[in-house]
Length: 297
Length: 248
Image (cartoon, rainbow over the protein chains, first blue to last red):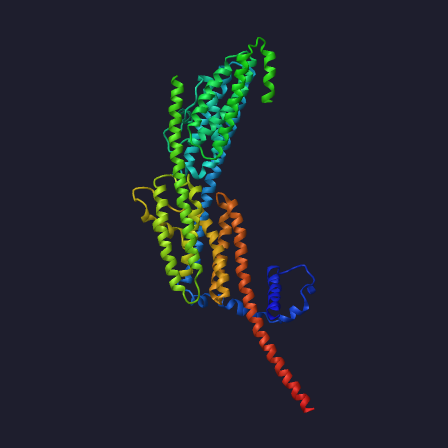
């Protein structure tokens, strides 16, 4: 009984201390309990907080209590300064990354013309000119990041996705130009990252290559529509090689693996396309394109 | 033909790179897990503290902690040596956080102060080869470890209260409050503050649990003494009335 009332007592006081000015009627607390705490707060206070004073508590614990608080505060002030600094660095990285992103959008939109039966060199003219801009932006990014050496991977997440897109576009352009895969070293070279500490992460490169392969089925369909019947075979050869290359990798169950699984689907689709093409020999390309609109719609 | 073979060569290179990286990550994760388990043991050892065995319990805990440093942290240092600590941070972060928790916990029980990050990093320096860049605990892991420390301190404080060491509990309460207050200023600037924000909520709950624990015992004592007085008063009154009745 005694315990019970004591706890309820405590609860009420706690309630009061947590909500010092509750908009409740004064008889919210049971009268009996208010009786239990007679109006003598000074004595309670004295008893509760007296022993919190440093002189008292230092008796139970050795060590300099007097120096502890300022030191602790000092350390946290340092942390705040450090973290604020890395925050501003991150802001600066983000501004550059946003520019990179808008450049990639520009490249992507001009590359889309490739599906509209324009000649490849004509289409590539504009995006190829943008590579220089990208190079310049990556140069700026590298300078910012290398201000704090050895922390490339601390901020890596901020430009990871954008870089993957950049690689996919570069690889697609490279493939349109030469019909070969853009290698890691070549990608680095194109972005001007080959001789600095700021490199191109291999995993980012591989994810970018996977992204690039997603663009190919649509390209094939539209090329066939335009009358290039050799295209599916060429693309299939390229993709099979690429797929064989990827199968050499021991992947973890991560993003790269999932992207790679998507590539398998593309290879299968293309296999169907070329089988279809080899069994029928279409004489009317426009009729033919009708069949391909469905799976990729 | 040439493009095909160059592609093969290139992919062979990527394979080597990825294999090496994955194996290393796996080893780092294992090292991190060992650090976690053994740091937890140190924390449990500190929890065995009581009024009378403080010295021996802390001595054993410190010895265990030194073993963790010498055996497991040094293994992590060896694995990470000379490479980018930020790349594999996700792999070793949990272990390091637990280690920070254990080390600061021991230090607090010994001296009542917070173990600084610089002091901690200084103890890690001798573990690594001086020619290479040494492993240093980064601010983020340290702060995440501190956030977990408050949970352990809460348990310790509740234990101390039930053991009657109210002063020690109050001391812990002060300390935890201080850490919480300082962290509120630092957390908004942290890299991935989402994780930390949930930790801050738990931390506030820990602080309040300690405060409530202390307050309830204080009031328990208070009402008990008050009741003794009441009973005494009642006795006196009874005696008086008894006496009055008799007198009449």
